[in-house]
Length: 232
Image (tube, rainbow, N blue to C red; front, side, top):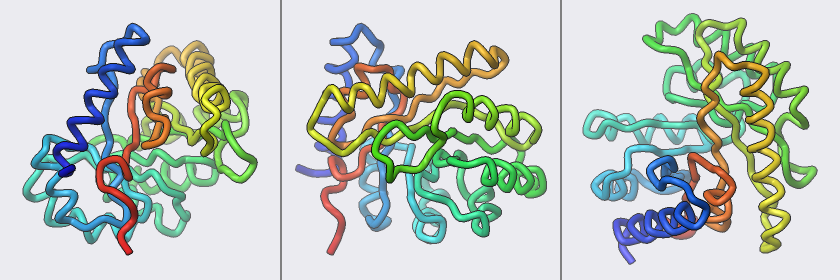
């Protein structure tokens, strides 16, 4: 299958999953995770109608999207772990940092985003730990609430939602529990901070995105199912 055909197949599967759970498929955004894949594959996805891309590494994203952004109206998110010494570069390059998993990073991004001359706030998603012990992220809703309070002290930041990585397993009930935990956390935060939209629930990847859609995901992060396996 071509990249365009794979994208069409994924959109159809999102539509089916949304319909099965009584949701509007238009409420679910499709992100192409382009890490390790070259600019030619990204451009093929652009030509197939995608405009939202996720990258794991700051340097790779900067090199890959420099020219592409001159040709296409792209939205670029960082979804990988971010070191504090790269926060300034990330804040200038990305429209959103999804992988905000600790208060120190909130502070660093908040300070940086307030100094880089951005025309609008840097969007951030708070990452919640809902799976294996090895995964990063805030451990519970109390920690998330404290992180939101911290982020609100920086006018250059805007908390727009939450993200998580479910356990990599074929056990659907375990995956579903992870996604339900994130959705419940978002509801708690929405009640605590009614002034925030918190509209983004970033959850679901190539192996579990249909379950994620059923559980309320508004953004699925798809890499392998669009671009194939990692290049050799």
